[in-house]
Length: 183
Image (cartoon, rainbow, N blue to C red; front, side, top):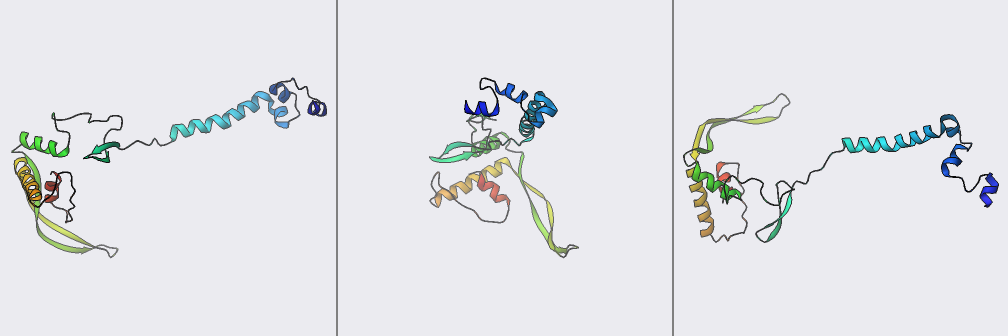
């Protein structure tokens, strides 16, 4: 009551009525609808534009149990299992390779080229690059690549490697990496 008597305002007046009867310069110049419109634009437009142009972050992996350990699988995050399986039972890369090897035994699978020669070339900025001269592709069929992968797996087992244990291979990039990755 004390504030109402000091300012001369009625305490029962709504906020809108107080604004329309106030001596604020903005309200006098633009009117109450203009001030409310400006406030709405100042709040609504930035929110709308930020939602329209903001990057949507996709979940790139899902949590899975890999051999008794927690891990991540890169697949569609909306599904907990594979969406499409080319062959029934081919749920891993190794199983998929085995199925493909049985179906496409004589098709080309893995091609390599022999190194004929190499030379160093200097670029205009002084950097040196090695230029390789390679021969024609020599192809392994799916059956040959699968046999090599099985031989590699047998060698690991003979050396004492256990199921679900890990091995690291350090080497220059070569076809044997692809073979070893199928085990």
